[in-house]
Image 1 (cartoon, rainbow, N blue to C red):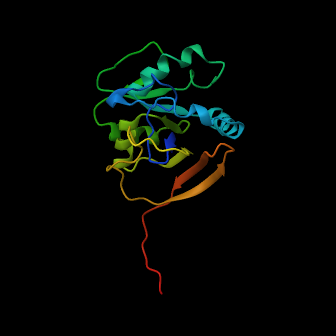
Image 2 (cartoon, helix red, strand yellow):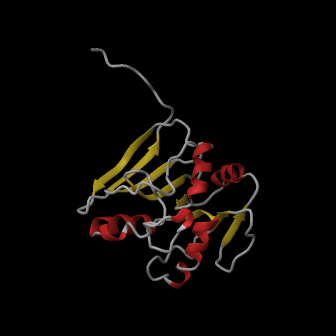
Image 3 (spheres, rainbow, N blue to C red):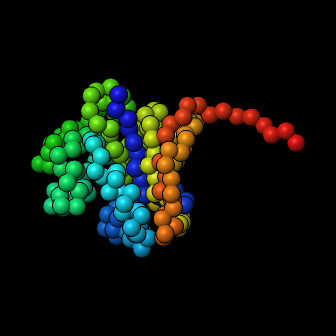
Length: 200
């Protein structure tokens, strides 16, 4: 069975929009594109290299796919694995693209992803794709979160967790803090929420 792993760069207040550059995603009037840049360091780069060189396919929303399709085919030297990886794209409007291999998913995305998880192949990595991530969480299809939590707040923008996530428990499988203050932490699904009380 393939796992769905959500990999996100996220601020302290949960924003995941346009961390990579000013023009990446200005929807909603977002004015802080490129907020990741000042915090890059060797520890973050080592963590990213590890994640980018393991076997994976991609599961992306349409907007993220379009941003990536304009960039990564011309920068294979930075990330050799991204071009040969199968890119599964949730979209109601796109049905084909020159960046291959790409498979477009329409209709019931939760059902399509459930079926993908049952098929043989590498894990499915989800980057960005804010709307798709909400759908995956709503249907309990996320197995792991690999987060890079940045030491800043933005106050607005697309957020990782909205009102759509179901209650779920996770365990930390790996964590460290980079010199620039980024918390790099991997969470793995660990069953249902348990509750209790502390005796005084």
